[in-house]
Length: 209
Image (cartoon, rainbow, N blue to C red; front, side, top):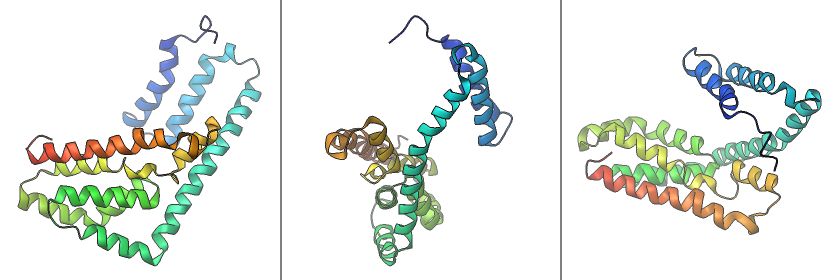
């Protein structure tokens, strides 16, 4: 790797800072903010891109695989939500008794695993139980902040099962297979996040959140 002709680290950070700034301070649409970041990245490195059209084409071609894999996973999640058995699964998960933080964690994890999507699992669980958890927060004395943290952490557990779009894209880009790499992915992206949820529930039960 040629380390002598790398871009200036400060200049390299400008496009990212610009995206965050335009997105959060100027409240631009995320697509617009990303386009500004892309233009800045190209402008700041114009001398490093002698064949800019070919570079853009290569980048666009490389993004197709990620788009297709993610779209397929999202479509899979939509199909899962549409089948009759999904309602049974949802009712079973949402009917868990005991500490509401535990039921929330299980609900989000299982639904995220079923849909292959962290945001999908959390969205479905909170859409169905959001009002109930607000009531449980008031009656149990557990702050809503604790529910929020547990839900956020839980969404990053079982979502990375083998059918997850990010997992499929990662394996495709690295030219690996599930057999080669999923064991390591499972430990890093599933086992450790689930353990962190357990720790968060214990701490929240002790008033630390």
